[in-house]
Image (cartoon, rainbow, N blue to C red; front, side):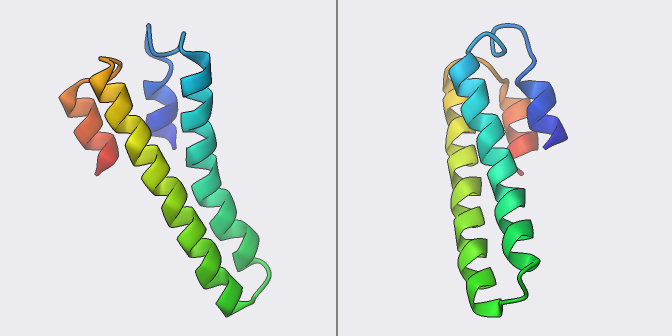
Length: 83
């Protein structure tokens, strides 16, 4: 999360408010979905929420590709965060 936060503060990138907001929401959704259902101690639902979190991670990865194509991030930054 820290890496994406630092990345979205870069000049140019930070001015694309809607896109930055979408990236930040994707990052938070991954952690929040896992934590929310973990606290309920229901394994069946927890597995479902892990799938939701995985979907949010996929959404974030998609945003990173857009950021790369838009010139907001370098190949190196993209690879570091993607991995």
